[in-house]
Image 1 (cartoon, helix red, strand yellow):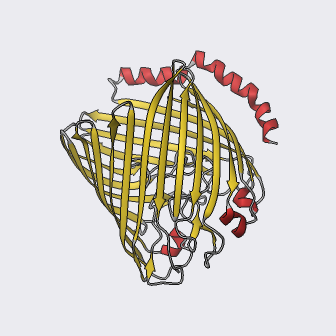
Image 2: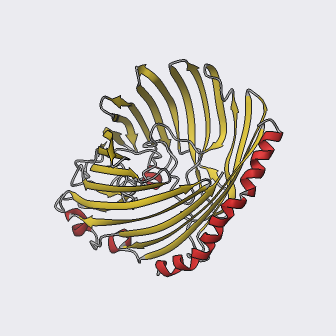
Image 3: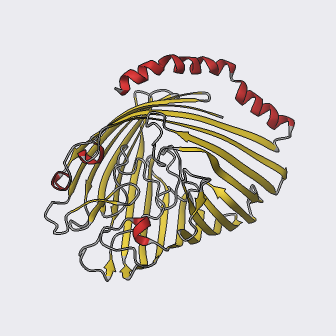
Length: 440
């Protein structure tokens, strides 16, 4: 059992905790930075997570006991004020899987980042970045880095932008890098997004606005998107028009609203889809401690008639970062779904935080599929007779931070709804984990 293995690792964690008093790696990196007048900097991360999954794929697959270890070494060099080079090596392994671990949890030493920046710190004027980089826009709902994953998505990209005191206009091209176990990772440039992303950080007082126009193109729609009814016989061309409005409200409230509509084509079908997110949060004082409570509603459209191959109504989540969006177990994606989510975060001390999250999910269309966090179909009732309620998930997790160390543990339980019980073996997944992270 995972509990026994974690207990066996306690001495190693204790040694790691003692090592904080002899933090020579970060001290050395700081010394190098100072000696080079901050032109050369180094960063390092060592993260381990040990987890138990029961009810995998709602009972279709065997239960999984897993440990994942990720190591990163990054460096940046700034020879002049207007030019910066950055790079990162990443090594991800899952030793409990054995020799046949899949590329979702294993990627021996490879190039995670390698890019240049022009005018990186200029507050106004022209700037650009190009190369391989982990990139996130807005809250990462459409283009993001799922950093909870052992590998974390990275992109080959080019971005050109112009900054004013109260606005930033950017043109971008991003192509996700595909993991290869038989060689170095590389992008499939036939799968990419190009477009414009504009930010107005001071639209009105403290209110901010993002708006974007993105064009996603793929040469193999069925192979990449995993659509449940549309065969991959043609190209995918999807246009996404969206905005994000966010800022504070009186009485310590804050809000965020994001909406997007899509046009274009998936194979021979016309793409007509949309999605929406609304979130309201507030800080409370409980016995002198800060409690942040938030309520969020999410929607993404689905196909009303799966037999109509001339029209596709399933929202394309692009390259989303879905961790925590629909529950800590990462079971679902932003496609054909309604989700009501609450999150309460209590700052017990400056170092300790405890969180409770609740999600309640329904299908937007009872005849379209249920999609996983990668956007692939996992179950469907084409007749729409299995019901719409997907289920509910509760999650409890806590973190402890001290200097360069972060420790955390959590558990999640999914209560299967009518749709899951009728279209799968109906098991309720359980997720238990412990992680540690050392970084500087």
